[in-house]
Amino acid sequence: MAERNNPALGFLSRKSLFSLFTVTSVLFMLSWFFVLQSTGGRPRFIDRGQSPTSKLLATSDAVGGGGRESRNENEVIPSVGNRSILMDGEEEAGEAPGAKADTKCGLPDNSKAAVLKVYMYDLPPEFHFGLLNWKAQGKGVWPDIRTQVPDYPGGLNLQHSIEYWLTLDLLSSEFADSLAGRSAVRVRNSSEADLIFVPFFSSLSYNRYSKANPHRKKSKNKLLQEKLVSYLTAQPEWKRSGGRDHVVVAHHPNSMLDARMKLWPAMFILADFGRYPPNIANVDKDVIAPYKHVIRNYNDDTSGFDSRPTLLYFQGAIYRKDGGYVRQELFYLLKDEKDVHFSFGSVQKDGIRKATQGMQSSKFCLNIAGDTPSSNRLFDAIASHCVPVIISDDIELPYEDVLDYSQFCIFVRASDAIKENFLINFIRSIGKDEWTRMWQRLKEIKNLYEFQYPSKDGDAVQMIWQAVARKVPSIRMKLHKSRRFAHPLGHTESGLISFKSPKNFW
Image (cartoon, rainbow, N blue to C red; front, side):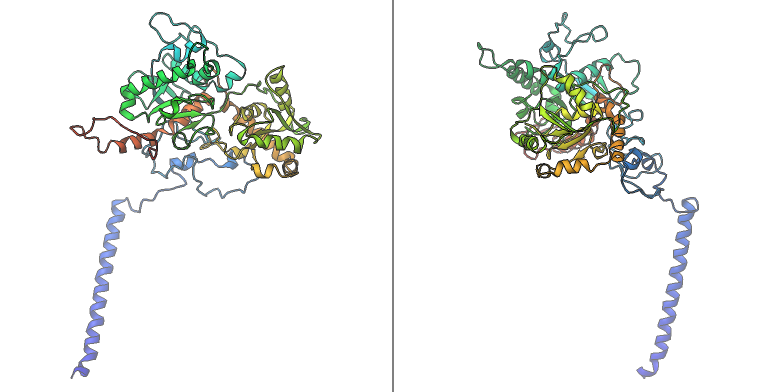
């Protein structure tokens, strides 16, 4: 009996499945129809080729990166800021002031960026312009820079004068007629500020006052650092953030040697990380700023590959400690090469003039690690349009998150450079066309390293402020996370950040 009923059961089963499939298909088609109706007749996709972000993307080919593979014109290239693809008209959450890229050279487009709001402490003159022998009138702590700007000492002092230029820029922002080309502006209410700036001329303090007076146990430089720490840590702005949103300039490698161990939560503006442990200073929270070059700019440069007779140029201290051993190794490897200038030199006895002439008549200029990974020699080379050859494995470079140094610099590992004939053969292999591309790029980007007052759009002062601004979203996120358990009605001090150790702080 069961066997006779099997065909009928199979028929009913197939019929049921067919009906179920038909109903499901109809429902699916109806649901898709309603979706189309609700989106204007077609699904809405993000057109990556037409999004605002894609228009901002800058490739190396667009900025003179010759010799690289060409890309498909429809290929989407990641932007320098690693920005996500956005819907038309949509703003990216948490974007730092000054974060948008410029289509011409892959740098922040200051004309479209929000201006960084900076609160600057009114520190007594002994911390800043008083170090330049400026005398305050009455109760004022700042010079009237509209009538007279105190001069900064020349020579090698100038190379670490970063805090001087940043302070002048903030002071001048208060009477500026326009914010055009300006990346930062001073605000008087700290609660409105993105960051808090500490106007201590730390490099000048070290250069001028690091030697102890015979009648005192401590130098003026150390005493100023102690007073600065006491002042800052007592301020409500510091207590509110634990110092995370404070900006401290310590560009000279030996400046702030005492205070930095107590002010480590702050953002440091440095020349490099050579004398800092990674839990005190690192690329995630701090900013690398260029040196101010000490040789003259090569204006109206009409030279070329054939009119620069020296192939490779170096003049400076040869015997250095720490990572500087490479200099002496290279000296013995290169001293007999006829088209190489490798000699000892200093700023004394007309040294700056000689270095200017030497770099402007050379194709390549060596930038070798010395006592620290960086030196002013790189920025002197840029000002001379002499293609830098960087031999410093631990170097950190200014604005490298938005600027591709491989377009105008040659990088050689120290271990390779000290191999016999390696460096000289490598440099000789770089032909006229490749050198000319890098030389042209140097002329395009040289203004990014110019310090001047008044500051101008795209110069070193504005570029540093923009680099600082790109750290703001990360600072805000960490501050917000640190306040998760700071209950306003009890148990902890409302809004105050406490800390004991730099370990894992960032």
